[in-house]
Length: 258
Image 1 (tube, rainbow, N blue to C red):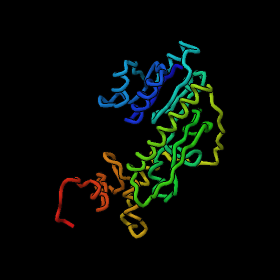
Image 2: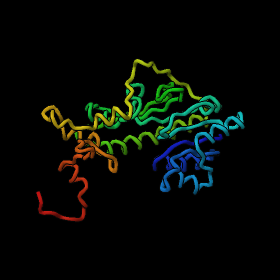
Image 3: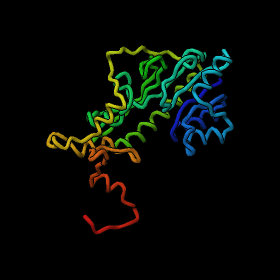
Image 4: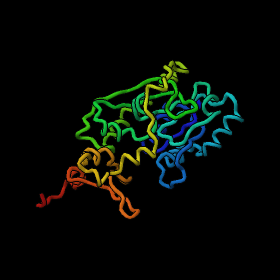
């Protein structure tokens, strides 16, 4: 099987290595190569796989009809277009770190905590012309407690599940080819844009009695990114509480501060 791999973060780098270890030929990798420390780019370089732009990948599929069996997207941030969607024999599959069709777009980990949901998960779905609306192949779910999670810790738990989902899907494709799926209904889910996520982060200083500050701090705690906070004179300030500070305390030091 011949693949184009699209992804970013260390989780994608791990899945790229696993894919190659299965004997799958990865022809090209699309990633955040604009950053010198990109984990997926570094892994592709280590494996000797060409790192290209999405446009170069599109040109490759156009100029090599029938050559690519599958395109996978693992935390890839850009909208994917044809011929990457319809060109591969087994389609183009995205691995979405949320439960579909319920939660499309961004801010998944934040929403899971803010909404005090009892479970979260990851979804494998075919890519279509819109974000996160393609037919669903499989959903892996797990229980979690919003009272003890941050966005950062929930990402780690979700990615452990999503990596298992990725492996299961890829092994099934190797055995069966294109997999069965269930179409999504547009009305079944909610799409959250980056703009909406940034608005949710903001603390309304004029309405503090209606803000659950500790919940909101945990829901958006994901350093080095800005967390829940407020803006003063054009500068944004992230809030932190004692609960978060305790998690940052070195395990091998002591303090008399309470």
